[in-house]
Image 1: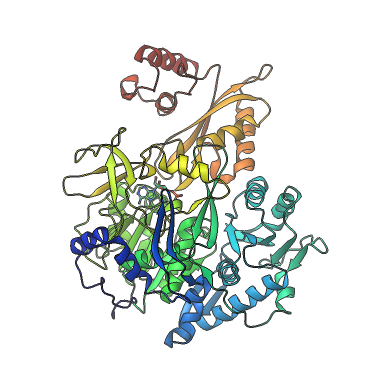
Image 2: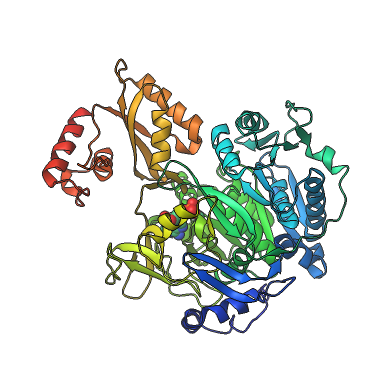
Length: 639
Ligand code: PRX
């Protein structure tokens, strides 16, 4: 391996972790300015940070373009003919895009958008499978200054329509279908249903992925390949101010309505660029594979923006990890000689359960670094990953972050200094990030004591606001511990300063690494006619981390039955999406509530996991032990 893909700078990579970290938090503005200088700007910023708590504007007055950074700046260099993307479709078809071809595709796509009347500041919704057109449209939107939202292609028409309506997207981009487990999943049909509910959409672009015969509404729906035939090969990148919103990504919170997390262009690009170089330590010839779907933030940051900004080579795969069999991923690693693999604990646990014979059949010797993201990785899965995938030679970077943080905040940073690895700990904060574990009162906890994770300083990758709802942004993230960003996660910092991330402290579930709000699920359950009231909780799951359990009260005239349970499951699945399918439904007569009317979730969780009452150690707020006990006994009897 040759040297790092990232050019040296004043701060990196010559300094060791603690020295660099101290300097970064002591002089954050100088530090971030130096990091920002590694990108190409059309105009330099006047001010590094304008901090009007809790609203941050980074690199004020600076002008840049995300698509320029990801493609244009490479085509004048030797990277012009380097592979940007190795793409593999689920049926086995492949596409290889060099930086030069990606540049051409992005320009032509930007021209298509312009010809459709999309201008700077317009909103575009992307509902696409994992095909190269997804990053191409993301880059093309950024090129002309349009703000986009990617909607995960597993979401339902209602979920898609909610997001389009919130953003008031003018153009919707989709495909006839995408492949999943051997068959095309029709997407155009779903978008037709969504568009009936979304009057803001004037035009829809349809990518031909599977050759399906779809209905096209004249004057509204256009095949992408037809529009391309009129497109020009060059569109100038539009310089945008650093705070120009690059994208909005919807994620679940504690209320029923998904939150539109708004990311800037300048701060987001700078932060991701830095986090990628510290954590993944990519070399010029490295092949990087992030297995996430671009529908989630991990795919935005680590399939599209960070690797492309560096001119790295990435792999992108369309389909299911177990199609046609459990060897598919290992075959991809062997074929493309992947060096860095970034995946989720859920996937690792799935492979672990299936047994190591699948990976053992393939040559994984190209791997030299492994990553994990999305949920806590249990030591058993960590050790399996280390042994059977990494051949006991690859360090594992456990990366903690959120949709809101834009990029990785807590993780090992092998490019600076690799600390001794502790399976299950994400280790230390990246430079410039100032986390702390505190108790309910906001006081720092003692080493080893569980508390809530907060971030005490703004950082360039942080969300700017929630789309159209700055009050909610203040309330959700900045009201609980004034002056600090509240992550909603439990954490422990041990005697040696390592962070252990323990999962959500709020009413958000993590099912197979995907975020789901309990209220979102409860609203979906109650929208099913026979259900009068519902509560959603989770129980531990050996593969998915958490599985959904619903407690539901039926309306008069309806009796519990397994047929009704199936119908309710199907209803939730079709309202929220397949990832929201409950594992179990309990029909009950009464939901235990505190005197203030809050559902006793910890108690429900204890019932769902068949824990004994002694395990319901933490009392529900506002309920006495006797009340909790009585409610617990009553429920156990009932189910
Ligand atoms: O609870 C934490 C968990 O995932 C949440 C963020 O979810 P989302 O916005 O969907 O982003 C996922 C990908 C960045 C966090 O609040 N989480 C994420 N990474 C880890 C984690 N929990 C433990 N360890 C991690 N490495």
